Length: 149
Ligand SMILES: [Fe+2]
Image (cartoon, rainbow, N blue to C red; front, side):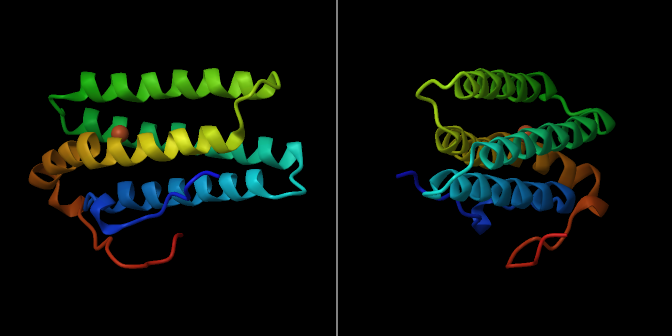
């Protein structure tokens, strides 16, 4: 049984757009894990949940990468490398899943969840600190249980 990833305030980076997207990603991972753990799970639903999660991850990386470029973030190369590495790992896991190997959608969700928490707490927090200084208008009240849009 995999542990369910959950949002907590240590994950808030204080940039409204990024925080909102991180929350949405966590929601998509939770959805994937619950679809995968359901006793009557249907392959098509699991596949759909996986696709949604990966598509949103790519969209989210695009947002961060745009901000890095716009505000001339000096550590962009290392940050980008983490995004690329992650996408290639997930692509490999998805291929194994589609090929019917032992990799489950829950495993993929678990991997993404663990990776995301690590990545947010270190790499994204560093980016956010840079943006805080240069683009204070990007800041937002992101604590608490504000619903997703
Ligand atoms: Fe990132």
